[in-house]
Image 1 (cartoon, rainbow over the protein chains, first blue to last red):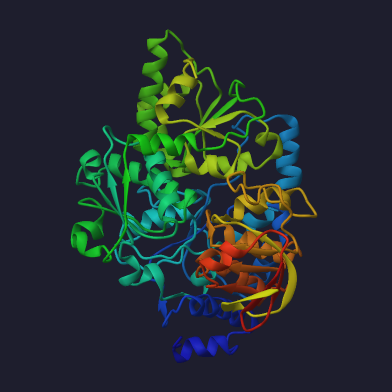
Image 2: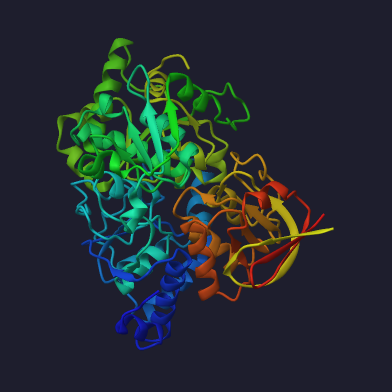
Length: 424
Length: 148
């Protein structure tokens, strides 16, 4: 890899031993993937996937102390993934003891570290940092040093920014030195499509299921998706963006997708069309039967498969404002139709702190509260990491949450039926 | 009879260890998180979606895999495993290493004293050949010698 004089000097220790190690980490990372150079990070803000102070990951926070002590702080402000604790989310006394006393024993320490390193604001904790109300929305062509699989795939695919699927820690190091290795999804060639996916369903496919199917098939490669514009249209409306957010999160967690193109919809597909597709790209056809096959393949690890759910999470990744309003309407209508006032399963909807603030200004907020739904900024995945939570029969319409925890997956319509007193 | 495979050393080093084989993508977060959280000394795999590895001890093994998949916390999870001496003896990738696994391995190499050689691009034949328990010896130049 060719380094500039300034980069080589940092690597040689001109800014101290710690900055040299930061630079060495990025150079080794780039060289592993054939990067030809380090390019400047051009986005206004960064995003870190690490929002949690987990006791067993103390080595990570010890390393961050080294950075802070050496003055190796981020050159750009950044947002972070959702916080792991919120007292509004139902938990037992024992769960609280495990959450606060054991699991997240480093949380206070880590949040203070983030303040020193450069977090945007106390409200900047969300996996959906790119939403308008949060304010970390990169421009097309921006070079990012982000981590958080769902945010990276959204920024690449829907916004046309350029970011590799970086790891936690290394993304912050990119923000500290202000450079990212030039390879993979930062290059034109790395953004070409390796797969053609033909969507041939008879109705709009469930975003979380379609994303799961494609992720499992293409793994880390780039799919070019045909036939989805039939259901989403050709404009990136709020509804289409919310769909793509959930779809992308499933591709990234059920596989390792960092970029997808949707024909006639996402920016690079609109600009370049099928010329993005590599010669000889294999074709994967997704129809109703394929989605059913994928859904049926999910293992259910509940001890009692017939257990009544005791908690429901909706919003992984965090819900958009439009999704919150939509869910409010759907839950209210379903309850009214059944002559009920409150949801029958404790239900937590999660969204960014800034989205929640905005939602509270709308009439739907009081409407949602009247149904008994709990609104939280928490990360459901972090909640489910508690072993006591893991034993609970928790349901979700998030395929990411299903993948990483014991939560059981249902489609959005099935979830609605369950939480409003319907049959399973 | 030993069989020899040649790959690319991502983190050069040497070791000998029993093989543990994942034919599907290795989800780092899902595999490590429960074991690390509750101090499982054998570091048993917690990924319910990985039928090859679920509940099998990973610490000290020659972990053979195609690539890692899943959350971008994967690198810090791998770094933490190394910093707390809970890492596999080595990681052997049949494909080109993915960015998350590379990050974790590189962070461990630069910022810790742990040793975890990493070799990639060993080829599909390598993963087809490997079975749990085979004895694997890794050399710094990326040569992997396997004995049944």
